[in-house]
Length: 155
Image (tube, rainbow, N blue to C red; front, side):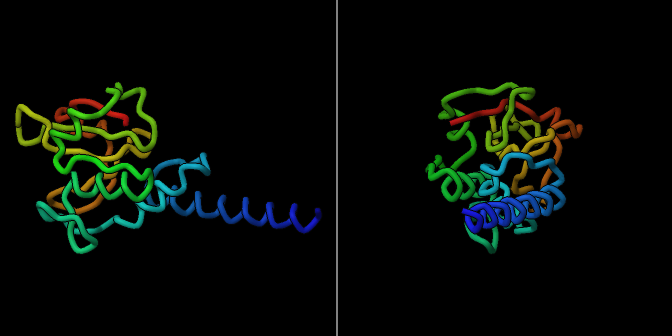
């Protein structure tokens, strides 16, 4: 019984340390240990370069990145393009009701339709594959993304 308690305590300390490290890396406060798989996967892709149509560690686009996160973390296969993903979300979510793991959708370049998707990670931030910087964390309140915002979505 004592060794089980000790092992449990050690596990919690390891998880706490990992949550602190991932919080620092991603710039969000991680408090829920059940979300560690999402944050591990997201952090693992930081810095991956952008390429339209990309779906690999070499290069990825926004919908490819979101697809990989959803497949690896949640076991869910999404459509391949952001417009189709947006059409098929089961629930639209307001910005203030987003939870880590929800998708965020944008119309960039003054487009009339949704052409960009990312994954919400908390604290008003999302991770996505940006054309200029590859996989990065951005803030929903940034002027560019604030103007381009269309909706949040949950499956």
